[in-house]
Length: 247
Ligand code: NAD
Image 1: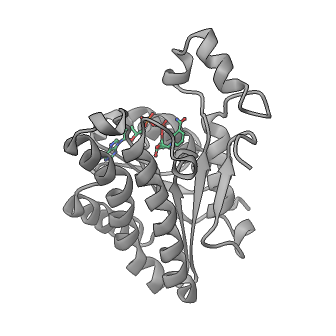
Image 2 (image 1 turned 135 degrees about the horizontal axis):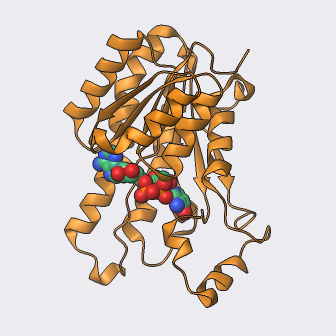
């Protein structure tokens, strides 16, 4: 039997990149997946991939920073599937610039999506998960939230906040059988890393003991572990998936 057979997962920011890889991985392991992104039509490829694995996909337009939109998504999940077992808070944005040049808007936008979005979904799934007396919440943080990367004061603060939120969630929900953990990716291959010059690329790579950028699938593997029964004695933890960049 597959680890997520009969389980229902919600994945935010599932239209592309890491979120899409997570949705596909959970579906491959047997989950039906509610895939969320800003516009439902962006989710067609992810939905197709989930369905190709014989699982149900429910694509929903959701702005994770908007409480009503988040509540509607969780209500629709319960209406259609009757339960929610796994919540993956993956949607995230960057608006990088040096601190002295950072506008209030750049600060607010990043905190709204990365941190408030994670809070809103966690709050919305907490009740149904506690009622079920089981569930796993996996939040996507970042190595930036550990290191405080220059040029990313807003992003680093949001991801450090996600880690603290994960620990409070874990403490509050443990007695009801609900676990909360975070994955902190390092440099993951993306359109952004593909566009780097050889010099900059090699500079980054020299800081990674395993000598390569991570893949979206590396992150999906870590999420699948933390969402599954294989990690049933883990809560409030941060799994660092960064090729050894930070130890
Ligand atoms: P991406 O930009 O490729 O994908 C993010 C997705 O989130 C997009 O589909 C976007 O439309 C969606 N999204 C943005 N704002 C949203 C909102 N308000 N509501 C709903 N959806 C929204 O990013 P990615 O590289 O796949 O990153 C995914 C997560 O991993 C993010 O939380 C990011 O901070 C984190 N992360 C990425 C890296 C990396 O190297 N790529 C490293 C560390 C952490």
